[in-house]
Image 1 (cartoon, one colour):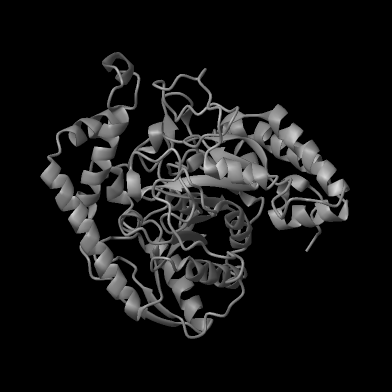
Image 2: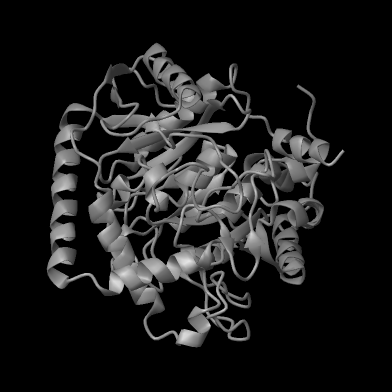
Length: 479
């Protein structure tokens, strides 16, 4: 393998090693990431705000620390991003909405951004999200459509679509996402990167999400190893988080490299009610077979619950109503009509209906707890299809009206608050990425990381990491 010389193509681990040896400067890495943003962002719209001055200033401080032999840790100097739902001091937090005043920048970091700065990460800017993160694709009235890095005519997924695209094109290396119904795993699956939704409460949230206990903070990276060092930095307690709780994993890197021998893995291609495309099943079947080859005891088994979409929608629509509460009618006219429509539905939901949905959520959690008494890990497709046309909320010809109808494998595990990830496992017939979902019981995040790392390594011969291939495709599409 030819040694990489372009810092814009390097992983966090590669950059860190070069920083420590003095062969590369964090300033050079920041400039390379900014160059890639300048090169690709106009086409894919991953970033809605770029802080070149702030990034270079942070990189220069990191350069001094490395020169003095006192880096702050493995993410010191690593180019990174924050999703535009999350406060980062000095950067606008528009949330993709004209209802947010761009002049009122937050004067404080949310816990995620604070931990990144404390660890020396170089924050490049903000990545795009749909308005208030309300749906499974990324477009908004303020900054427009975010496009798939493998084919700009297709969607990136959402709501952390900007972060996933930035990860795929290495427009920065470590990217923050959030996930209340699949918003990390959906774009990770469509864009061919690793998306980790830790168990609820692992990464503090402040200010709290309108989707309350459905919402998880997490990461989007090209590799599992990068996610592990990232999580070691951000999965720390914060007293501002109303939902704070433990235990916090002591070391996210510890499970990496552990064998799969003896693990009990259930593979459910449909969850008992979904209908994945044949090319998606081909890729996920192969990944499940690889887990068996690595020594895991793999069985086909469904968890035993019916589609919880109706109950999820009650919780989701109520959250949307809370978001729009107090926003003037004139301003609402400038908002995403899909968001205003579900908010209106949410406003009409009786309290009793909401409480019944909460009870259904509790019952679903009980089913999954029992399922994990028999199986350590559940594997499913991340999505039943590859990325569809950009600028749409759903695939062409889909008769259903809601984004959850085409993402049946993600939102159930927000209802149960379990750790879940999406790992690239192949390509569909249209040469677009397919993701494998990895789910473990509550507080068993280490099992997700263990399985993801082992399968990532095993999949490389049949599914190379393809670093740079998304960028190559994008460049070739211009010709």
